[in-house]
Length: 162
Ligand code: PNS
Image (cartoon, rainbow, N blue to C red; front, top):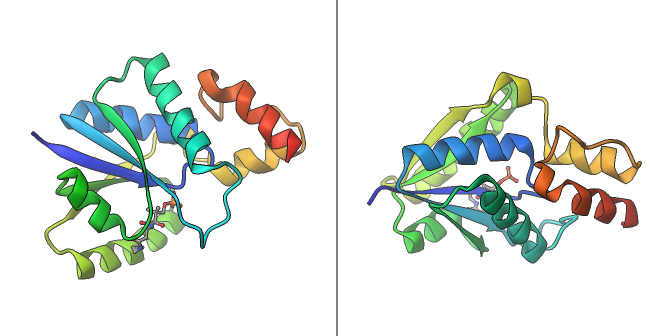
C-alpha cells in the first residue's frame, strides 16, 4: 500500500490545504494528515479542534482514504509510525520554497529514506494562508472562499471570541 503523510499546523485548515489533501488522496492509497501538536508553538486552535476540522471536511467532501492524527516530536518519526515513505507539502510562493528547502534538508539529514513530494498550489488558492484566515476572522471579516464551507461558521465564531 502506498502511504503518505501530509503534515502541518492546519491552524486552521484552509481551502488551500483541502486542495492539496484531495489531490494527494487521488495519488496515494492512504493519506495520514499529521496535525502538529507542539507545545513550543502557540496555536489559535487546539490540536483536537484542528483534527475535528480536517475530519469534518473529509466527511463532507467524501474523501475516504484519509486518517487524521495529532503528532509531536519529529515529523520523520511520525511518518515511520504511519508506515509512510513520503511526505506531501504544498508550494505556493517563492518564500514557501525557501522555507521548504530548509525543512527538506533537515528531514533528509534525519531520514534520507523518507522522500518529500511537493504539489504546486492551485493558482486560484495560492494567496490563502492560515495566518490570513486568523487575521480576517479576528476582525470579523468574511472568510468565505478561504476555508471549506463545512467548518466556516465554527472557525469564524471561534476567531471572533479569541
Ligand atoms: O503548516 P506548517 O506550520 O508549515 O507545518 C510545519 C511542520 C509541522 C511540517 C513542521 O513544523 C514539522 O515538521 N514539525 C515537527 C518537528 C520536526 O520534525 N522538525 C524538523 C524538520 S523542520
